[in-house]
Image (tube, rainbow, N blue to C red; front, side, top):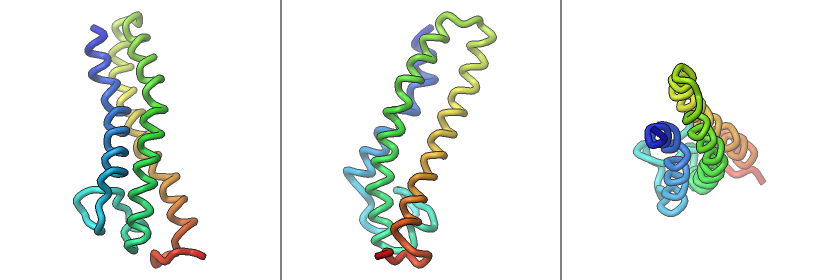
Length: 124
């Protein structure tokens, strides 16, 4: 049964770490709509784009690593929880993990706003 919990609760942190590593190792060199950190602020200029890719990878890796232990602990709790609690956990935790992924946008946007103006020019 633990395999089911691991398969349901552990992919998100590892996907974040893998995506962060991939973006850091193979950052998109040109602004595109295919992959990379793609927000309006990041796509304003090539320097903003490159800055966003480098820092987004770092944030994803850090956030993914921080999520591993709580996710593993929840897997362990699921083994001993009542059946109704297991169903709730398996429904709610992936939603919370997705929220963490989306919330990781906030520090990236703050960094971009501090370093680049509205036109994507670096603030000196």
